[in-house]
Image 1 (tube, rainbow, N blue to C red):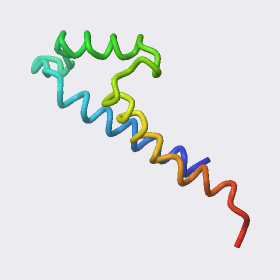
Image 2: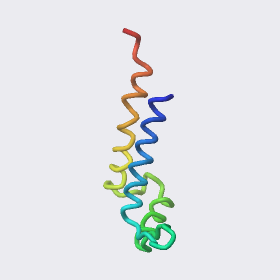
Image 3: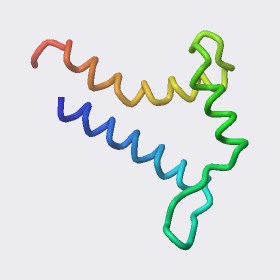
Length: 80
């Protein structure tokens, strides 16, 4: 559980760093503004079933799953 939680935190942190790097920061209050073109793209992706994503988008999801697979696979290996 802790290994998977750690990977999930790393995944979430990576996404947040990317998201924040794409935004414009309001210098008065520190809020972030997501450019409209990204909102549009991400909303389209959120509303698209996996089977209908482009290969590039699918590969991005697969890349994330690859981080979890070794931990999950290790759960089913017989003890040494």
